[in-house]
Image (cartoon, rainbow, N blue to C red; front, side, top):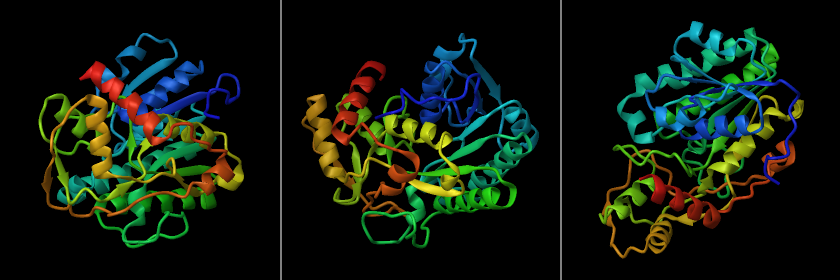
Amino acid sequence: MGYKDLKFPENSRFLVTGGAGFIGSNLCEAILNMGFFVRCLDDFSTGKRENIAAFLENPNFELLEGDIRDLDTCMKACEGIDYVSHQAAWGSVPRSIEMPLLYEEINIRGTLNMMEAARQNGVKKFVYASSSSVYGDEPNLPKTEERVGKVLSPYALTKKTNEEYGRLYTKLYGLETVGFRYFNVFGRRQDPHGYYAAVIPKFVKALLNDEAPTINGDGKQSRDFTYIENVVEANLKGMLSGPEAAGEAFNVAYGGQEYLIDLYHKLCELLGKNIEPNYGPDRAGDIKHSNADITKARTLLGYDPDYDFNRGIELAVDWYRENL
């Protein structure tokens, strides 16, 4: 269970791009806790210095400030690295609809730069963040990897393109890539601030301030909320996966299905609040229902998530109580 007992070769060296972000900083922390060297590449456009402040004195931690849109920076980042976890990207479906050109530059060209740098530096395994948004208008539940629809946003298109490049880099160049379709990841260090904040930290912040948050739509949309520790497990197991996983993309989720209004009431209960939410219009590009079949990841990666929604949400709320 989990990832605490995973065995990497001695003196393995890791690169986490977007390492000062929510997911990236948790990956850096896990790798450091296993006793390995980790280099963090981040340009701090969305990552936060406070997320990595605790690591800066660790001799196994190196911060490289730079932008994945610059190939030379990517080459430098991959020097002497065995395993790459590529998390650097711009998220948010609504923001991508407003800024499609920027998403193309960062999420597509930036990822291609990283794959090319990893290839030229002889990296053993390149694991990267995709997204459940690639399923687009495919209506069937649960979501299975081989069945995708038409994408509904520029963000989703960038992630679908990343997967195609991942497949090609494995097939044409022998770089073993593994993609992860994240389903609504949440947990410690997820940023509650700003217009594009994810739903859980946004709700928690409002409730802690005794404010009524806005639910987009009727609250009856559902998500497979996935605690951060499960995502860390998937990334580390992806790095140790066999050749049968190379070039593939995998659902990374718990396999549950929570309705947004139920999530809201659970947060109210945990925080001891009784506040009626506001309701707003549906968000453009959003999927109504989303939950994952994780059979493929279980089979090929040995992914066995420990944290269900209830356990995860309690841990997340505890963290926000202490840190907001």
